[in-house]
Length: 197
Length: 197
Image 1 (tube, rainbow over the protein chains, first blue to last red):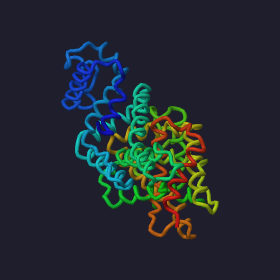
Image 2: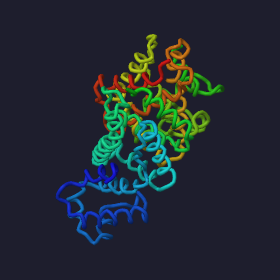
Image 3: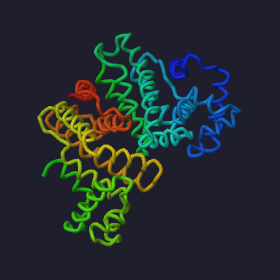
Image 4: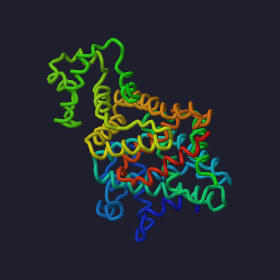
């Protein structure tokens, strides 16, 4: 199980039946691809999955949490490298995230979700949970580097993940996903330079 | 003239008459305080300022650019310290930005604007311009440190500003403005550690 799948799995919750959950997530992904963010609703997903709305709500408290899990599934192509160098790992991760957002509908979906979270409290809560999970997950790259002595002992891996993710998110939100590799590399190198053992 | 005023002034444009521009900005600020983000419109500002809408549009191409200038004016209380230490300067700046967003309506206004920019192209353009201006402005703190030999010669001051601002923006967008001083200090120290001469 990759570091990425492990992170996604955590949010699923212990008692969920894998077949139905997967069926609903697949239906939700299909609805999102066909209708876009604005046409995505629990009702449309229930219809498509031939499931009851209460079944969906039992596992996902609101539309945003379901949407975020679909979004996360679509991020299968984002790399979490393990090269033995924290700079290469974080650069590879950030670069593939930029490419993924730029070249798939995922970037637009995440922008819409971030926007909605600014006025809808349930979306804000789902986003905060999602972001905390992502920090924990990306933090594992840093924790691994710490374990092999590449990163200083006092460094909080999740805070490093927070800095990298924030840089990426704001590039998405301000239409700067075309940042060239050299610039992205310099940003990552700056962070890595600040945490070395 | 402080570094902050200088930055704000730049966006005003050479041919604007200061009296009318100030009158319109003051009217816009009053409209924003009374009606909130959702009730803010060029029409309401024109009525309040007793100005024609074309006059406003001559100086600000759209609602978002006017709103961003009002927002920027409200950030008068945000510090751009000059302590002789880049870590103290950036920490002081970031801390006062967090406090400003947390304790005034500014945080909510900026969240709304960021949200609108995800679906409205003119708001997106105004936000991109604003963000570039802010990077240039905060970058001056870093350029100053570079000039006194505290920061390495290869460092791009605006990229440092980008990292600090991204960290702050994402904290705003994910409801984490209550981050304690020690955590904020560690984030800034990490960045500064990575750019030292």
